[in-house]
Image 1 (spheres, rainbow, N blue to C red):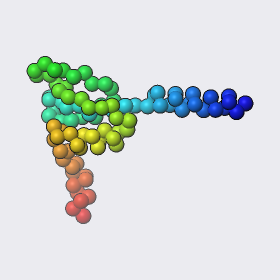
Image 2 (image 1 turned 180 degrees about the horizontal axis):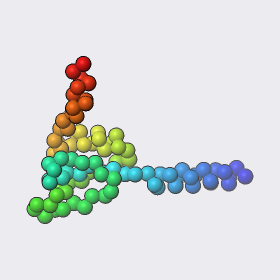
Image 3 (image 1 turned 45 degrees about the horizontal axis):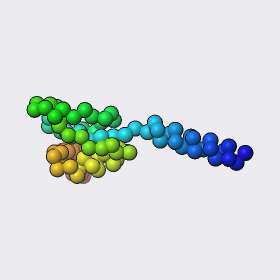
Image 4 (image 1 turned 135 degrees about the vertical axis):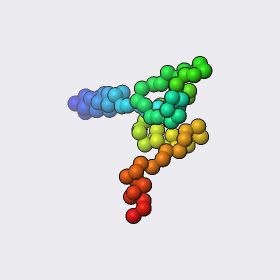
Length: 89
């Protein structure tokens, strides 16, 4: 009985990690920004392609945000107006 419960728990744990979303950081030439996406990016190596680099996969959104902040090709994100207003107080 214990082995049945243990195997069931292992199958459940493996199943939930299989459906976990992965994140990638991609450089988009069209917008001149680095974006975080949840699908594996297709890098367009030709001149004029929109996606020019991809980094990942990352296990969490926080990991992807941290990676984006350390990639030198990514422009620094400007704070939103709400964040800027909160810092002034």
